[in-house]
Amino acid sequence: MTLDPTPNQPLVNAFVQRFRHANPNNDPDLATKPIDTDFFGDSPKMADDLLVPILEGIKTATCSSLWEWEHENETPLSPGTLAVIIDGSGTPRCIIETVSVTPTPYNEVAADFAYHEGENDRTLEGWRKAHWDFFSRTLPRIGKQPTQTMPLLCERFRVIYTEESAQEFNSR
Image 1 (cartoon, rainbow, N blue to C red):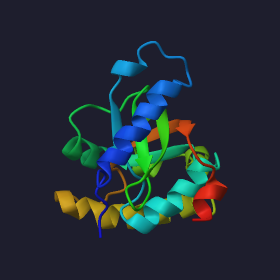
Image 2 (image 1 turned 60 degrees about the horizontal axis):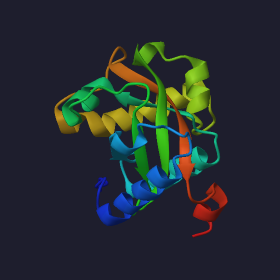
Image 3 (image 1 turned 90 degrees about the vertical axis):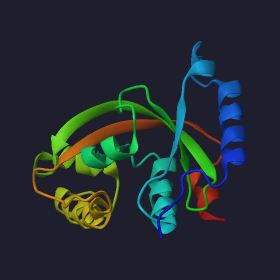
């Protein structure tokens, strides 16, 4: 089952309003900045599983297939992009800001990047296996197959707003 990024749009809208009111970075332009809604993974369970290391500050990087990004989005991913990250039920849990985006072929992703993705055993070998499996599931939906040289968007991000800790999220 795939995850709909907006099943609880009223909750997301209220979360964004609280974030804009709090303005944790004292950004004078925050009121007019677009804020996307997104999730990590390709299932409600994966969204929940990946949210915990994000809230713990362990996961500070992620990657997307450039092919999927171009298929699903009108604007390129760039530093400063803001996104509400929802859990597997569509409830907003935090807002992240993209710090950097580096286009990288799959077979050139570095061990340091894999480590900062904060998943599995945090090794490049573990990263490659998990992501090959992930792209093998997701790319056929857009008529593509994974390749060793497929273009990825290697993103570094930081959490800039949350209303609960990883421990609180885990105890639900």
